[in-house]
Image: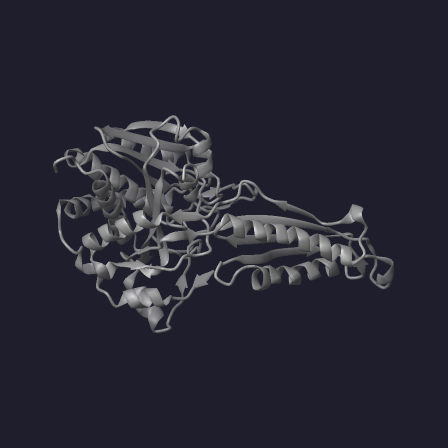
Amino acid sequence: MKATISKFAIAAALISLGSGPAYADDLSSGVAADMPELMELYRDLHANPELSFQEVGTSKKLAARARALGFDVTEGVGKTGVVAVMRNGEGPTVLIRADMDALPVVEQTGLPFASKVVGVPASGVETGVMHACGHDTHMAAWVGTAQQLAERKDQWQGTLVMILQPAEELGEGALAMLDDGLFTRFPKPDFVIGFHDAAQFPAGMIGYSSGYALANVDSVDISVPGIGGHGAYPHTAKDPIVIASAIVMRLQTLVSRESSPLDPAVVTVGSFHAGAKHNIISDEARLQLTVRSYSDASRKLLLDGITRIAIAEAMAAGMPEDKLPTVTVQEPYTPSTYNTPAFTERMAAEFRERFGDDRVMKVPSVMGGEDFGQFYRADPDHIQSLIFWVGGVPHDQIDKAKAGEISLPSLHSPFWAPDAEKVIATGAEALAGAALSLMPRAGG
């Protein structure tokens, strides 16, 4: 899939992001000094990706680095997750998260360190494996953040919890870590923060959304029974393809006629399977849906509506009560990600002061999903949360996209090759700077 350049990227592309931060300080200088080592780590991570809940080598490699920096490190949290804790006196607890898993994608970037790894995901089909979502840049920036904060213990006080999360791509890793005692075995955070690289912004730009940032993601399966028969004699059968088609069309009214126009929602039928031969009316049709929403109330409206519509259309077609559709919502689902507004604006101000107004932009929320939202949902009365974007599109590609010469690859594309140096440097400095501002040393 390809993504065309957005107006936000066009606007930001006019900015010279290569001129350094808004002001130079020892943190930005420290990150710059670490970049050769971090880029070497990035290339290693990129060349050796691991699939969801298979991040054994990755977690061991990064756990060893955290342990060498003086963190108290626990491995195997939520299967392959890592928790690194550094206690540094009285103060707030800040959790910084990076995700580790790669995707079942055959890499086509042409990079000299491109992945040649082959693996078997949950589908059971052997495939190439690639960091097509940029999690390798997240991990390298995580290490850069850990290094800077470990070196600056005299500049902050409190408790730093740095986690490496598995299986973000399945939407299951954050919940697995929480279920394995992330907030009971280890210090519960006051603040949780993370970032994701972005395929629609120029490299080095920071984007953020206040409030809902990413959507609830539900996968829904509908089995539509029919009564099979000969295609030449449809009156002797009940055609599940016709019933399922009616369901597909009626589902569109959930968004257009039942949801508020001010409350974004998506109901997409991504798969429709029925029948095996031209002249046979099958006895079942199967639909697969992705459903996106922000609020819990909107999610309930959509899921309840899907069940109601599926059953009603079958009844309207004359199906008996023992042959009505079944609707299955897969669990666990990926909940929406909510950036707590006051905390988000506080961090945005910190980013603007550090990087300059031109490199920090408030951007619209998206209907993509991210299980980072699980950490806030675990204790919304106590935890403040922010995930932000760091642009990864190389500047020469921005210019070509503006001129209409190319279209930009999206995240999850086999062609996605971000400007890793800018992503890692910006991400590490932003995360470390945020932690320093949240845990100031008394009298400092």
